Length: 272
Image (cartoon, rainbow, N blue to C red; front, side, top):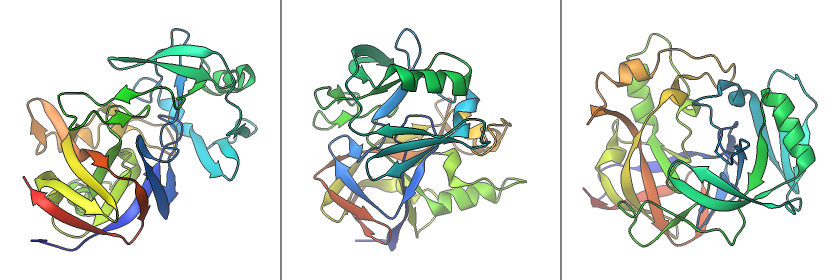
């Protein structure tokens, strides 16, 4: 039985991994996650993925979704905006690594690589995940050989508003949800209700909790200024540590496609 009324309050995608996210009122669910979510990624000379964990300045690059491509701007207006057409993906194959995974991606364009290299002050090649690349979710947590984009490990991350509100009640200065880079944010219930869910549905899509999300130093980077601080990890560690990992939010896998909309109801079908 549904214990509380849960509704989607925000939807986010991050087209280029580790750059600024986009808030949407509706989003299409695809096999790899939400449409356009982390289908592009920046890599170094060896194909290793670049992340705010090491390069906080990546937070200063904001992505906008347009009808025929992506627009990338610098939050401090230090560079002219960069437009990346969706059709511009005729580059060479690049072998890339994300954590322990290795897969084939396509370089988007050498001129685009030059723009990102200048923007970040280090070599940064933009690659895109082609449809022919199937990166599998960790089999220890997958349920049916699910696939994932260039996200860290799972197609979706969900967090409740009340979980953030509870954290902010413990902080001297409140932080926004963008520190945690979720795909789905919901209203209703109690802090960390998402920890108690096993399966739930939103519209035509069925979701299953794969594992809690272990948080890293990226959460300590102000997404508007790229300035680091000790929070919120310092405070989270006092009440959300398990097996030496700080947990906040739930990673999800799913079956079925469809459309998610702000205001949609989350129907819990099984609790843990």
